Length: 300
Ligand code: CP
Ligand code: NVA
Image 1: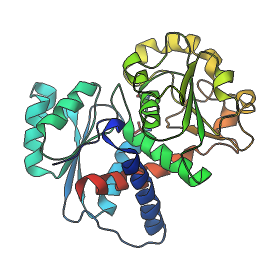
Image 2: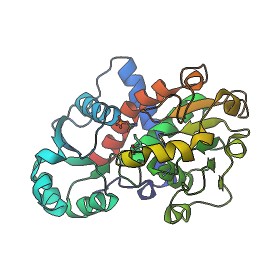
Image 3: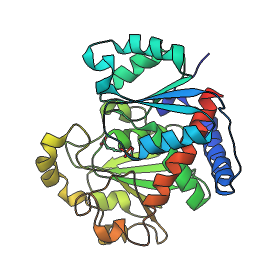
């Protein structure tokens, strides 16, 4: 039976911990120059409906390092862009490729693709979730703090797709998640319903969210597809910028994380983004190692 990664709810706690361990091992092999062609001869189709820098390059490079071939497809250049259904696309691509990864606007489109495809489907971001990002961030926290379980993560800002995947991760792994989001920008109630109440809290006060946290995390205020709301969001979220004074409320050895791309002067002050607590570029690098672990888990 093939497995997909459409949301983090498809993984157990043990599987998440396994992916983190495997990312650690693959990163070490990569750093030591030891080849690890775990998917030799396989092919993975990567479909992009939205722009991407990190996800696209880290998947392409990671697939090549595993001995497989990536095929990048712009959705607008496929028959998908001319009305072929996502289900037919999934069935056809399954005849050529050993796995399909997709970045799409609609989460339901990815769910439909996964149902129709006979090969594993990986969600590379939808309007609802971003599971590969958060699995990778869990690996980064594991690397920095020695473990994920027991850590306190503060997520400050828009209750968006990235916040949603944080909540779903907390439903599996034993860490504390403190969300600080403005009124009207809270995560979706259906996602909140998955959260264990004893470990996931939501406040409208960014200071309360950050107090004592080991990790302070934020994301853009206007996600892809929300460009028209950008000016309103700047006004509505202005008190949720991660500033040096907000960081000062976190634990002394707290780290700052951001999935990137970042907007200095909006969701994060330049002094924090470029300061000594920021680990955003290690975080970006770890997309490569974690996604290789995810691909090996699902495809080998
Ligand atoms: N963090 C992330 O997914 O970045 P890209 O949009 O550049 O892929
Ligand atoms: N929330 C952002 C994440 C980008 C990686 C977006 O969807 O645009």
